[in-house]
Amino acid sequence: MKIATWNVNSVKARLDTVSTWLAQAAPDIVCLQEIKTTDEGFPSDVFEGLGYNAVMHGQKSYNGVAILSKRPAEDVVKGLPESDGDDHARYIEAVFSTDKGGIVRVASIYAPNGNPPGTERFDYKLAWLERLNRHAARLLALEEPLILCGDYNVIPTADDCHDPKAWAGDALFQPETRAAYRRICNLGLSDAFRACHAEPRRYTFWDYQAGSWTKDHGIRIDHMLLSPQAADCLLDCVIDRHVRGWEKPSDHVPVLCQLSI
DNA sequence: ATGGTAGCCTCGCTA
Image 1 (tube, chains in turn purple, blue):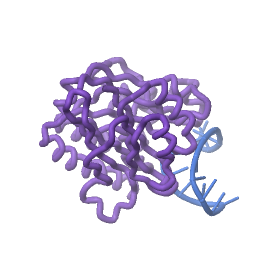
Image 2 (tube, helix red, strand yellow):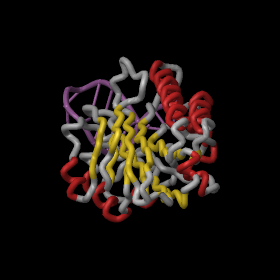
Image 3 (spheres, helix red, strand yellow):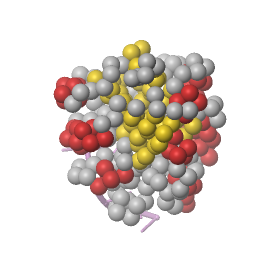
Image 4 (cartoon, protein in one colour):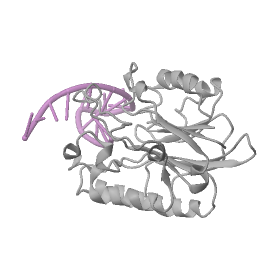
């Protein structure tokens, strides 16, 4: 089974790019982030034409997450618990049946950017990650194959960026940010990419500005976190880097996991 | 030290 995550930076602007990639990569499940549209505006018909069901938690202009899947989604949850007063669409979760008669629970996550540090935006980021932490702990207690994937807006280590000094003042690389992310991992979740690949400087995002792609000045912020039951089945995890060089690309590229479930 | 780009749907905000 192939499961992927991709921050598409507007699903409408990226419709051709996403369609082309789906036909080539043929994932069973794809988590999308930053769809930047409402549920009503989501182009479900196009994805249905390509053989995918879609569930989404959309929002006008900003944020928004979705899950595309060859099999229909069950037990869909939109938004994290304890999200009173939070109108950002950043979380959707669903359960899918597998070919072998099992299930896998998958969440599409778009954590807040939080820039600049020292503002209420940064506080919101840290509080959001703590809410995700508490929800992840509850999900782990189910002892199921579980994949919490998406744009965490966290650079986990200095090996996950071109130049740590360039990111020192950024919300994505603050010690508090990295600690909050580490606490989620330390609940017992595995970073699928790092479980398969130790080499440094493998990125999932390159800014549109300042020739970041040409110079390979990227960061690794799109992560697939696996429960022990999912990690047992992990065969490989790859970053689909070449997609960043396509026409009209997202600033993020897909991350893909192959699981024997 | 600054500015560089993209998407939204209004000329500013978010990333």
